[in-house]
Length: 445
Image 1 (cartoon, rainbow, N blue to C red):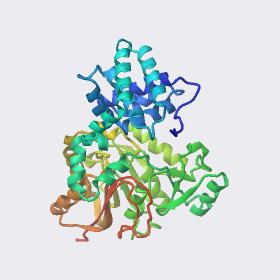
Image 2 (cartoon, rainbow, N blue to C red):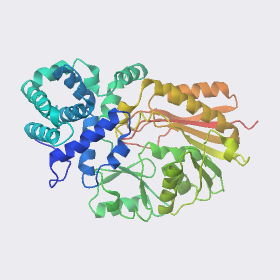
Image 3 (tube, helix red, strand yellow):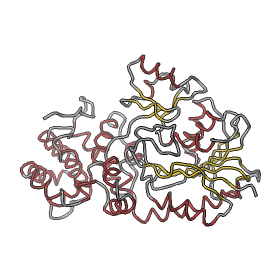
Image 4 (cartoon, one colour):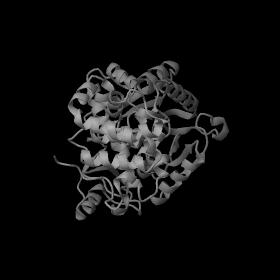
């Protein structure tokens, strides 16, 4: 059978990478984000470990159902992480990154050389039984929607209810890898010129969004021409809609007073300044460490904003009383729209998180709306596909605020759903993450 390229360096034994990947998977299953767990892996191992973990997280539902069929009881966490990792990597013969027998041998080796040593024979027996009974076990696992769609049961149910005509498309899209998309800084050079610079070094790219280029194949940022000089930034096509939507109809030549309420890591802040270079932008984030990321991104792009570590929901602490012409509220959310890039999200979220985050979003909307001047605009957005964080949030906000009117805006964008939304006819988005956008205008009186 044809194998995909192995995601790790040949100089590092596979068993060692499996140990690292199992430790990250265990951290995720215990409720931690994959990012800090990956950062704790040695730099030499990290690229291979990340490739293995991301593949496993996209197939974890299948792996856990198979493990239940193979074992009468759930093994200890370290053992279970290694076993489920191997099952996730090897359950299919079509896109498995390693030959099945190699994977089994190296998984047993990883167990024998690590904290799962006492259970190495158990792991070996489970995996070899899986190889013998593969077709029967997979057919049995197909009866469980968690295995079929590799999402928690509650998530699948919610998508079926909210997107009855395309829930399968959305879940399938979540299990693919998102493309690498750039935003060209046209203060530095025109998009067409940057596209030519990419072509000159054999990097294929097609235009998406107004100033976006989607790469045919992901590249290290240090390989991109002019990246260090601020000619381009990495930003998904859906996220690139935020700044143009907020600024549409405003005179960007004027020193507009703009609030970016939840700004880190600063991609949308920078985009606002690329379009409206005379704007006075206040970028807030509650986390001081993440504020440093905003500073770094703006510095690379030769842009300036006032950056403040503060809670957007407590304007009495930081607001000077001068109303804003425009407010961007990219609110905290479940991140259910960016699962392609963060495959751990689906396994970290709980159903109760949706309502809790929706309440935080409602509070932020209510606290920030009075800061907008009459005739001003607020763009509310989340990287979520759930109605409670988008469509339903807007319906209840408009009911509470009779001086707010909805302006043309995309609403819910589903992951990997192409352009063509009548609200944004000139933005052929190509592939993109899941997002929600609502543009609000404040009445003059």
